[in-house]
Amino acid sequence: GAGVSQSPSNKVTEKGKDVELRCDPISGHTALYWYRQRLGQGLEFLIYFQGNSAPDKSGLPSDRFSAERTGESVSTLTIQRTQQEDSAVYLCASSLTSGSFSYEQYFGPGTRLTVT
Amino acid sequence: SQQGEEDPQALSIQEGENATMNCSYKTSINNLQWYRQNSGRGLVHLILIRSNEREKHSGRLRVTLDTSKKSSSLLITASRAADTASYFCATVWNNDMRFGAGTRLTVKP
Image (cartoon, rainbow over all chains, first blue to last red; front, side, top):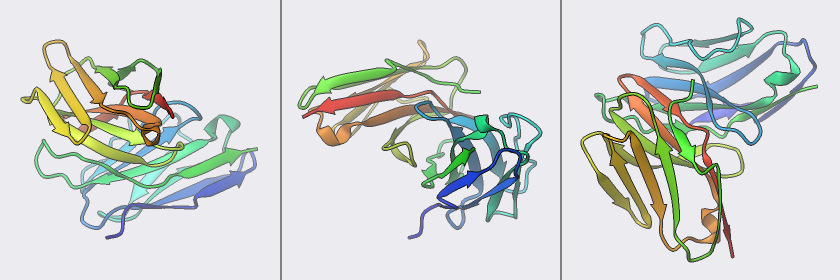
């Protein structure tokens, strides 16, 4: 079946411009995560959506970052007034939560963002 | 913020040798998971171990969990060049999952 998809796969933008990244989770997955990964580094948690609950925004690095999710489907991550330090791969993952012991995440291929 | 911390940060071995990576964490967990990442893109889930389990196997992978020491280890036996990748541990507590910075494994043919 279809996995998690992300678009665009690559994005080059000029400093100061806004960008919007999209994530299509696996159908039926109630949880959706956004991560940032800088070159050669680990994953940095950004934001987490779980069903209709208020999202956990504790990982967003600044107020230039925001994310939305429509129900249990598509999510968009928006970065306003991009800076060069925003350059990274942005990964989206979804999972089917069924109790507190089953949180295998399925990752998308990521969007590589380059801010020039 | 990140939860698990992998050790070592980088590991280089010869094909056929075993590779051991460790993960330490600071808070309680429901479960701990290991993922592999090739070429800086999407991660692939390898194995999940629950907090009440001590060891799990999957093919050439063996994961142990010591909740008293708040640590886990991932053992890859008889490594292959194709195992070259970054390996991440992730801890789950309530409705939250956090990743460590990863171990970069290089298997030389």
